[in-house]
Length: 442
Image (cartoon, rainbow, N blue to C red; front, side, top):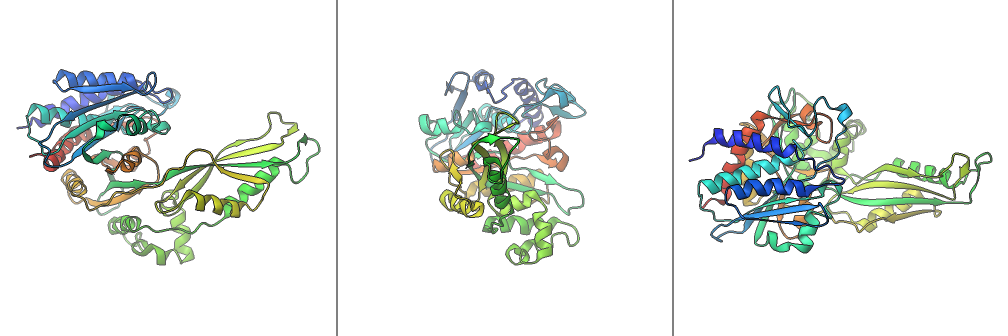
C-alpha cells in the first residue's frame, strides 16, 4: 500500500530543500547537490556511490536490484542549473519559496523536479518492499547545462558500470502542454534531440586605419558572408516522427488552425502555408538544421580595422544529417574562399529512440492517467539533453515528465521566476511511482 498524500508532501519538502542548494553552472558545485541526495537515500538505507569528475563536479548513483528477468532502467537527472539573475526575479531563486500554490526556484522545471520525482519513487518502492523485475538505477550527474563533459559523458567514459545492464534511460523534457482553445492537452515524450555542430567563420584581410576603410576588410567580408548564409534556403526535412508530431498537434487545434499539418511535405510547397509555418521559430527548427549567429569578434579598438573577424555559429543538426555535408553546404552558401569555415569541437551525431518500445507505451499510459483525454505524441527536441549520451551507450533514451504546464509556465524554463505548482509535484510523484510499478514491478 502506498500513502500517496505522504509521498506527495515529502516530494514537496525534498524539492524545496534541493532547490535551495545553489548548483549554478558555471561553476556547478554539483557535489553539494550530490551530498544532499546521498543523505536522503542513506537515511532510508539505500546504498549510493558518489564521485567527482573534477573538483566540485559531483555525480551520484544508487541501484535498486531487480530479479534480473528484464534489463534495467536508468532514472537520470542533472544536478546543475543555469544562471538566475536575481534582479529580475520576484523571489530568491535559491530560497525555496512557496507562494500561491507554487514552489519557486531555479531548477524547479529544469530539472531538479524530475530528479525528486525519481527519488520519491525510489523511496516509495523501497519502503513498500516492492519486488522488481528490472534494476532501477537512480543517476544524478553534473554539467548538462554546459555540455555534459563532467557529468553524463564522464559516466559513459569513466563509470560505465554505473549504467551496466540497463536497457532504457529516462530523463527530461517531456510534459503535458495545455493551450487555450485546444480540444485536448498534448503530451510529449522526447525520443530524440537535435545535436550541436559548433561552427566558426573566420574572415581575413589586411589591417588598417578605421578612417580609410575599403570594401574587403575582414569585418566587411564576414558580414557579407553571414548575410549570404542566413539568406540561404536549406531545404526542410520531415522525419516520420516529426510528421506524426504535427499530425497529432493538428488533431487538437481548433477550427482550421491545423490545416496542412497532417501532410507537411505537400503543404510546404504552398508559399502561404510555408510563410505561416516558418513564422514559428519552434516549428521551423523542428524540420531543418538551423544556424544561429551568437558571437562576433573583430577589433580590440574602434579605430583599428582588424586583420581577422570571427563569427561563432550555433548550428543544430537534425537526425540523418552529417557534419561534413553541413559544413560543405555552409561553404557553398558563404561563397568566399577568404572566409574559413571550421568545426570547433568534435561533432556529435544525432540519435533517436523508437516510439514503440515497452517503456514508451507505459510512459504514454502514465500521461493518459495524469490528464485524461491527452493526445500523446513523440517529439524530437530542438534543444539538447544528456539522453544523447545514453543513446550512444546503447540505451533507448526518453524525455518524460508527468507535469501539466501551460505556455506561461513553459516559458519560465531558463527564464525568470521558474516555478512548479504543488499539485504537479504531488500528482507527479504518484504518476512516476505508478509508472515504474507498471514497467518494473515483478
